[in-house]
Picture 1 (spheres, rainbow, N blue to C red):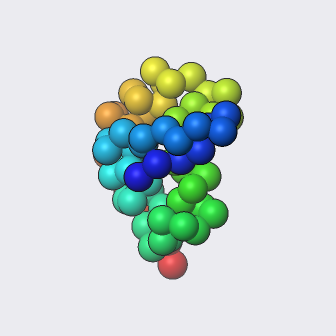
Picture 2: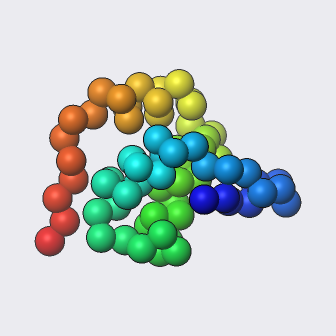
Length: 66
């Protein structure tokens, strides 16, 4: 999977794809909720990349959607 950052195609790491697949539960990959998850975990919203990585590694609770 690739996303566009600063007019360049950037490959999304597999660990982020897997995280967003689980975290967004039933969202398709072209759904805004899924895309937002990818951009957030790629650090595009100013979040600390190391902190996001630790969160993905340590979080064992999976979200539940109705």
